[in-house]
Image 1 (tube, rainbow, N blue to C red):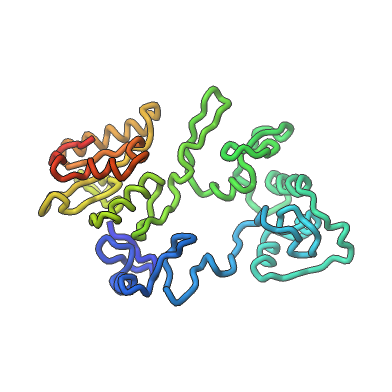
Image 2 (image 1 turned 60 degrees about the vertical axis):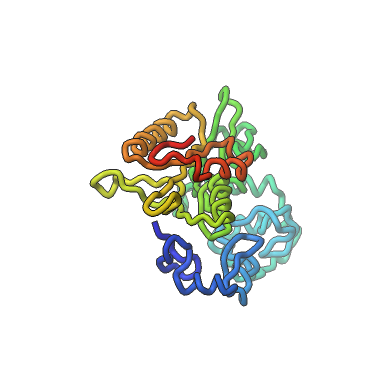
Length: 316
């Protein structure tokens, strides 16, 4: 499946994440990858990460003074008085336009982190007099202390601290819960966007390692290329990696990374479903598991050795 160009958004050339024009510019060194954030950009222009950020959420760290009045804060962009006085839209507007509004009495605007948190919770929970939609954070018990299930910080009854809520609110997270007390985030990179050395955008750390190995060994590959197995548009699998003509003309190879153990019933059923199709269609598949990522170079050197790959079979 072709990817859109990461520079202009047009359809990519072949399996590259660039259109033909920008692929040529990349090869000429006119488009480079930022060493800090991994984004591609024109060599004669600074990366977006070097420019002034555009805030879409109110930050809770990185500030020592209120943007609006200049009073001292403990990480928040606004003190408690300003937080009460302005709407979120107005505060974001001030942040992005860098406006400064002063109060006559700065002492009234001193920030207290616990009180600001309490104001936030009130805004999240009390929507009877507001058009703002309620916050989707699940409340366990506002009367008791609890910890963020991803980082362990105290949250006063919320499942997530402010930072983790904004970090993960648009993602699907997978947890392992033991004895109803121990909560483990299996992979914080799940369904995220990780940019590889060749510009491919993958969903997990393991896929990132595999993609970089293939790129580093000059192995032509595509990420999640569709593999039809039936007559309808919905009957399509998306193996993690596709290596066209790897074993010779029309002798393609696919790679699947199996990242979860057998205790995950849904994942196990999905794996079995896909494996049955691969076997039925006579697909040459390379299976990669978690232990292979401990030494990805050695593991893939062995598994991708053309002399030992069994065509039309599942290669563990």
